[in-house]
Length: 553
Image (tube, rainbow, N blue to C red; front, side):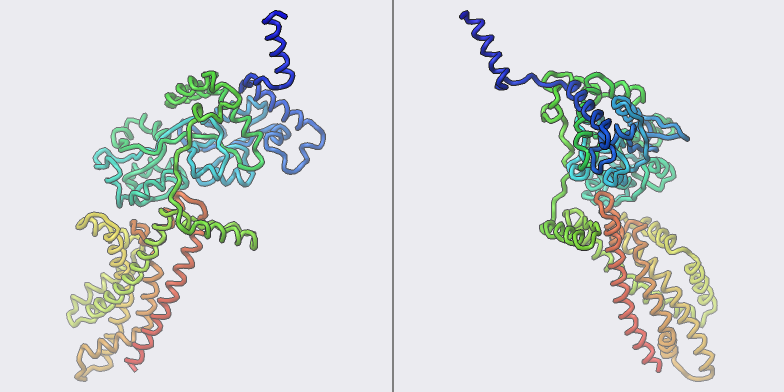
């Protein structure tokens, strides 16, 4: 037998026995096969009524795909009346068109997009969601990624900020759930949280925020405005992150695979690039990805699992605490026995744990300082209001009326502003300003009670030779109930220090929830902490009141 025939017979035999390696399936062919299988399954009687079917099959059953989209993110997701437009919106429409179903849009925000996936209220997230290692445990990201951005810090041109060393102690306006928040906190920045990114340029313009951080893709449209570009500039960028569509980690295996393959095809054929150009976004990433997915080694049904083709997620893993295993076990124990989903992020990572510890310590400093300041200003203003000099009396009575009439938050903010005129901003300055403001607010009320008691005692002892110091001591004793009430009020008011950036527990937990889940549990712990603190203060003040009243008796 001629050699060539022997070779052909050998190849035929290998093909029959399945030993010869099969040619790699193209993403287009694999996509068609999976879609056909899902359509046939959806058309099979009884399938659509079954519980727990894969979301891809259910999409064909219902004839629609539910997409989570932002509505206030210029160039990517915007809504005016019933009209939606933007890169993400058009990508969602392209996905729906390729599936042969209708898109149904649901508004999402950074803090709700993964939650809505878990609650089965949407099928896919297309909402500028950066793919990082921390989110890998929360959603199944589609690869290849459909866009890429980095977080950029924006501020007034005259503000001297050039790197991380310049943001310590500064307040930065951010959105809840932004993956880069933890990195800013690790450089001692104070965060002011907002639900929607569109608020950030407004707050920059009215100077509520001196700095704001968000994806450079978000600010791109604002820098096309001449007025905005004249006042503000990017200070520096960080955390370059690829964006991924996201589906639920359970019940979406086939949908995820279909979207993976569709992403490959959309990059290779230029669908993503065309949509990007249509919406006037930067297309450098999309142009590079078109070339990547046209390469033979990437243009296969398994290309989206090849590290040489796909981008890695941003490494956003936070250092765990030594006791994180015990915390997770406790969460699971509570869930199994009560059915409640409890999340304790402040005990799981070192950044959160450090914030939590310092928040508690600073809150205790605030409480003790506010109590001491209230008592000091009560005695001082009480003495001045009972002065024999009528001018002194009326000046400090007028000051008391002003303090009593001012909202506590406004008083704290003014105290912070005055303090910063004399000292550079720091956590110590913010805590000190809050202590002085709380002491003045509550001390003025207690001081008024002392002053009124002094006037009564002067009338009662008219013509008698009684030392002023003795009368003052009796006035303090008579005012014991009022003094104690305002001491307790001062302890309750310490969380307002968060408004001026003091790193007490409310500020710390706000920072933690900016990059971690479990907001309900986190703020419940805050409530429990302050209830316990105030209970202790009430008990101590009760002892003080008894001592003062005994002295008067």
